[in-house]
Length: 71
Image 1 (cartoon, rainbow, N blue to C red):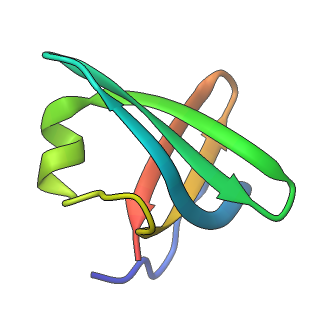
Image 2: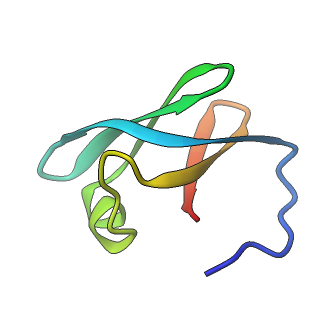
């Protein structure tokens, strides 16, 4: 999968530093050159994206929402 275009201006490339899994939602900490960005996403999304510590991702920040795309 590759992202060809997206309308979110604030994108931070980094690696997953920590995942705290819950039954329904999980916290994903992404280490970027500018610091740690934390996203709360569904545990199903963590599993579907096959996110693990060390996975390269892009944190997409819009207002109060942080989305993650696996590279």
